[in-house]
Length: 95
Image 1 (tube, rainbow, N blue to C red):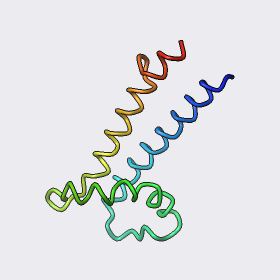
Image 2 (cartoon, rainbow, N blue to C red):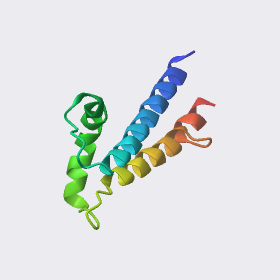
Image 3 (cartoon, helix red, strand yellow):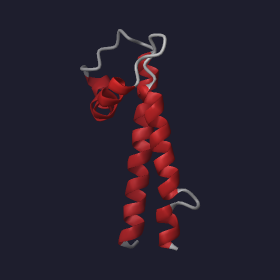
Image 4 (cartoon, one colour):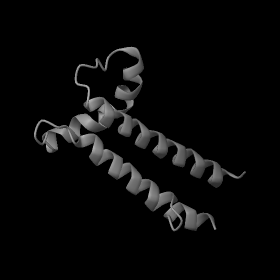
């Protein structure tokens, strides 16, 4: 494997992991009593909170529901598709 394929794989894994963490964060919003500072939940909260905190200032909860994790799932999915999809920028550059 050359450097570009390793970098592409690493970026794909990173973007996929972040999308998964945000999806898990969406599920956690259904349980407001969950303490995000405790062990199993802080694994999800620590990497996602730097993205969610500034976004919450721009997008207020709608009907008491925090939709910012949904926004970030869309953003990470879009970036992954633009860069690494079948006709993504990095995919086309590697051919």
